[in-house]
Image 1 (cartoon, rainbow, N blue to C red):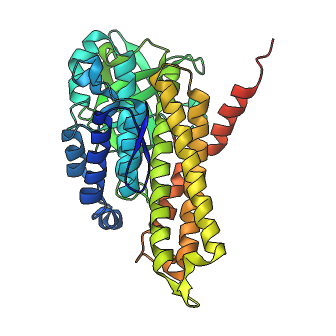
Image 2: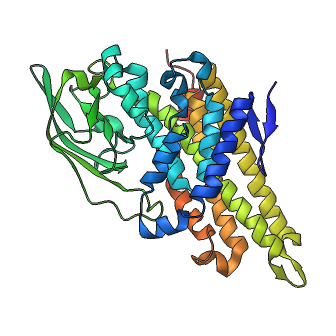
Image 3: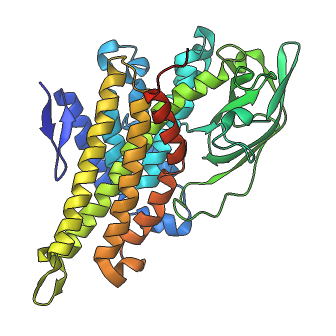
Length: 392
């Protein structure tokens, strides 16, 4: 039987362990993240020490818990790990998105790596001490990932890689990089996946981008200048990189959805508190129908988006197809976050346009969620194709 728990937000759990994990996440988010989020965002300071604390609590690598403990009974359902990510994002989106990116960077090795590769690197990437980066996009190929030009030339038992990856979260601070590289001429079948430790010679990093939001997390170029790797660093088979990337992106889209719901919930929380305290014309402004209906619409969109990503997560937990629902989740949740944060600024009025209140930051942070892990226009392509009957 599924039970509901939570503070102001209902949560979906099956066991006491699941409930305890969410309580730990809520406490950490409230006590450690929320108090420093605005300060670190203003100063562009990445909270590496807090990420390690998340790792020590076992929260950073929850999707791989059964691997860490070599115990199938230790597996944490995606429905729970994504709710943990939502709670973290509710306090500070940057940290939630860092968790999601780390999950994305780990997935290829965990799912497609050989026994030898896992014995060598698995404990390291799942330790909670290290941080990964996922490198797919390039300056000339964002949504059209198959148009990448970063290439590897095989030289005996080694690969020599040259090219540049763009918009990489954790650029310059990650401990390892999961990189998609062209090894053949075929558009999708000519791409391969490599695991690259951060100290590999020839791996260099550009100046972090100056972004609208999420400034505590560096995003930038990753240059591969004559990076030489042995074939042991090839994840999966040569030419298998594109399906590996797509499989990882489905998981990443659920991470974005959970993070977006967390951010939207934070905006709603702030708007409810403010509108209950702000008095105009002799009453709290939440008593005016215009404001009350905005709050109701925010709550409705957030609940719908949460239910959608949990549905997708349950499908993933039971090995059912979930790819198109992951796209629906990402689309609906990020749109809900953009609308909720915009409406929160409106409810705050002129105060919402100042940095004295958190909603202006929430609004700036929400926009990127409609872009990363495939723009929302790409999500519509994925969804519409899933609805189309196959030709022939």
